[in-house]
Image (cartoon, rainbow, N blue to C red; front, side, top):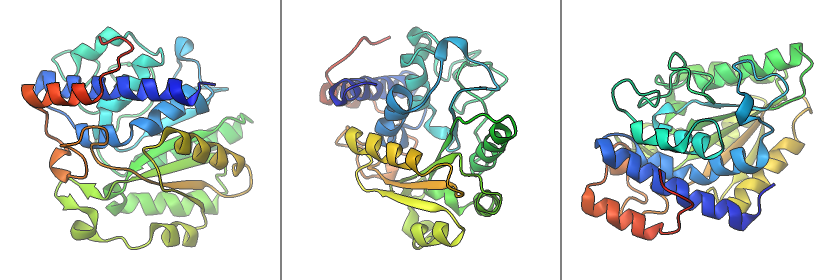
Length: 282
């Protein structure tokens, strides 16, 4: 297990990776990636039971993670590489021709750590449920995790999956919703107000936890450990995680305009200056 200070250093490095990757090709999604950095760092460097050096698609005996909102691939790729799934230097190929690091994660590229293609929103929960049920059939006590955007919950398939998970007692599943309140066209409340997500998921039979400080690494670790304690009790677990779009880069924070826009040279320098500590850039 890593200390809070160690995790915070990794968070800073991952932020650097994110802004450098999208800047290099003038393409990608920095806002949501920066907002979910603490979550993915906590998951891969402290919470999950996994073996990066022996990656297999079936993941028997390991915890599994499914990224449903695949457009935040920069943070996913950075965390995978920094935790040992593939060389860090490969981050420099992000979104380039013949790269394994496409704009949305794909499985046909055979990138270690990626178990589902996630370009179309709304499908990750169904995939995670399937994996969780497979673990039950195999008497594998590992946990399946998934991450979703709050705007993504406007997709109907999410709610079909939510209904199924509780009806079939998929209690080895911990799903998390990134509640940054922003999506590509504006705030989620203005695009399609979804009301109380807690009330909705509770009505669908889930155990729901609120994570008010999704950009505080210690709070994220604590919430994930609490969620783990609620697995195996007959209900799937949902974490409603409040984050800030563009967290860690002041001119990006809280604005949907940075959902899918890359920083220019001056903005990159400013972002890197705000995240100055590095463990070793690629």
